[in-house]
Image 1 (tube, each protein chain N blue to C red):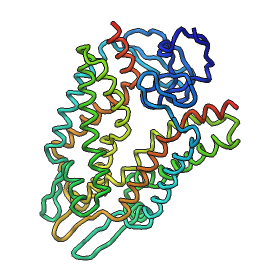
Image 2 (image 1 turned 90 degrees about the vertical axis):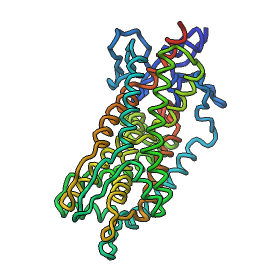
Image 3 (image 1 turned 30 degrees about the horizontal axis):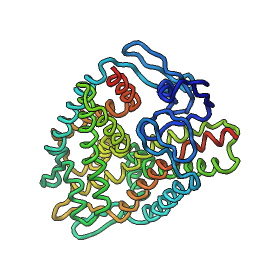
Image 4 (image 1 turned 45 degrees about the vertical axis):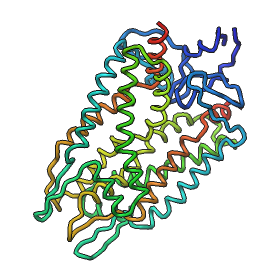
Length: 201
Length: 210
């Protein structure tokens, strides 16, 4: 017979098994993967990925995402430029999709992650009006959808490469893909236990 | 709270969305248990899970192979016919020197979807024939690591967005692979999102304990 506190129960991030928290060297009893073993650097890894992602997001917005090569005349368009162009052409739904996927979701994700990372360390949002677990779940859910723009560029570049008219990927596509990748890593590195511990005391 | 040993922890479920604790209770075949706090699905009980899963993952693999064999779309610009298939999207990126984006696209829409589907197929086959206890565990762990990186459904939406951008400039013809890809994405969402990974762990416990 073991007596346990309900608050000492944690969920393995890999296999979702319920485990008893044992501090250091926490290994999942079912899949043996270590559960957030860094007890000293708990938020730093997530911060590092997040900052990398934010840095990569700057060139992603400044450089052209898509380069149209028409009869030797090259024209680049940035993410925001592309959205504005689509809006002016009257394709409002597509402009909205690109705007949400490439601008809203990344920024929203940065802000949620910054909020979560700060709030687990400093007394912020203690009122529990916002369920941080739900917030975190939301970031994991919407995160990958910002890849839409990168895929669209890849599709257009693969589809249109004729002698006279070509569409090429721009520098921003690399930066944007890296930004999304590091944001996803940052969310994966985030230690969900911290929310629990912070809510308690 | 008192428990006999650590294995009793399998009887406790933590809600994936809001982290509320729940005690697992036996439910009827074909029904699901909901979280009392946020009413998201905790787990379902399906006595045919291994059989259905095996059938669905084999079907998904067939559709994925079809989706990679034929053109997804072909377009007609000023008399020039161009077509696109899945491999061409990242091979063009490699050709024009975009190695990083090329690798991302290759893994996210080609390598990982294939891996996930094949892994699920093997896993359900093992569970169906009640063999390979430790292999099924390794497969489950591997699946949990790869699953967030398989983005076939996002690729499908991207195709639609790209095509809407081309309306007016070119004539668009959908290829066989486009429909195969839609079928694959529906099956993939069912297998990876609707069947929860914890349900398969529960199934694994039931299968090998007998």
